[in-house]
Amino acid sequence: MGQRGVRDDAAGVFITFEGIDGCGKTTQLKLLAHYLRERGRRVLETREPGGTDIGRALRAVLLDPANAAITPACELLLYMADRVQHLSQVIRPALARGEVVLCDRFHDATVAYQSHARGLSLDSLQGFIREDILSTSPHTTFWLDMDVGLARRRMAERAREADENAPAESRLDDAEEDFHRRVRAGYQAICKAEPQRVIRIEAGGTEQETALLIRKSLEERHEL
Image (cartoon, rainbow, N blue to C red; front, side, top):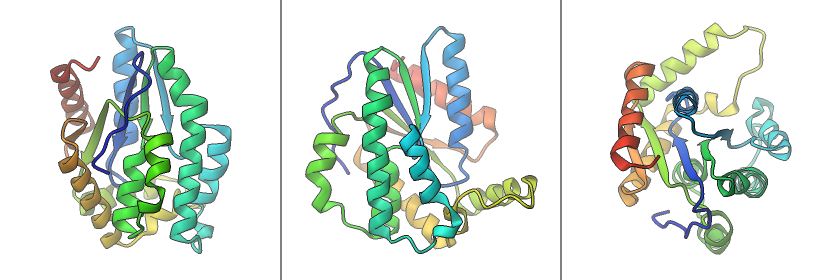
């Protein structure tokens, strides 16, 4: 997007985790949450889509492999609906209470996936996005950057470890490799446009190596 909103939630700290599927962002969010709680911080862990009851219903529709016929425009609007509900019901109240909000994906995911990868223009939604969504902008975003081939190998390993009879975790897991390359390019563009907010983390190492990079970045920024 290249533009940050004016934050209306000075009491709390809003940190988001972004990256292509398989980059380990969910794991890193949980590791940081544990680290911060050990140091006495009040932490809320949440995710998009699915951070509210309504969001969980939308997530089921969005990620169901049976819904392969969903159009890009429909997908975009469902993600937006989830985000509006999430901000109103969960994120903004937690920030007002002075909590650290750690969110697994936020609006950058829409820019990377729906705009860069799917080719949708967000121009017609810019007023709504700026006034309703980006009025609460992350203080810091960790972009966990990983080679697409490595990420897909990790996803394949995850699938092999899962119950063979279980349904696919997400219809996005089956997307072509070129799609994930476009998503990664989208995150690269976001990081270049907003270097003060978006921190690139090399995520190809071990979980603990990546976690240490994240903690070091927070300490250097005096964010917490």
